[in-house]
Image (cartoon, rainbow over all chains, first blue to last red; front, top):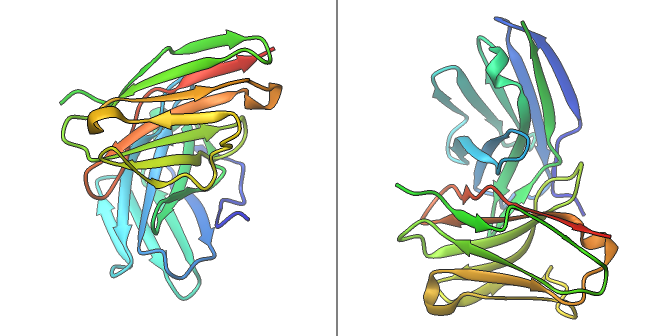
Length: 109
Length: 111
């Protein structure tokens, strides 16, 4: 049973525009949410996180939004850069980390 | 600060053979995880250690997979005997509190 879902396997965005990656979860007990970025042949790299007591966390070009009532979080990247092209995984933490299936982002120069 | 170290990076074995992976977590990180990532899927937790004790191994196929974390630092994950469906990237991660930090992974191909 997939507790964390990323329904868009891929996303293409023009350089300089906004990238929005979405994630849904099913377990209301999750209290901590994370986004990881993964390049080919490398392990996932932590990008940004948000606690369930917040609805927004910002770090430079990256902002994560959490809508607890909808059990939905999103990652906004503004402005998108070609180096942002990677697979992005969202994860939710209860007693362990549960990962989504990933969204492959391509930023077109 | 050194990251999570894993070896080997790549391994090709025949089905029914055995294989072992090694992980050295970030110094001071009490929690260590082993994940399996099959192509096109997200990482799936196999086992979680807190120091040298097992916190969660509910998704570890215990008939063929085993893991240990001696002295609460390094860890090894073993598969014996391997099956074709074990082909995946095996990721080790560690954490103190909050986010987990991942190693580069070991890509296992079972032929």
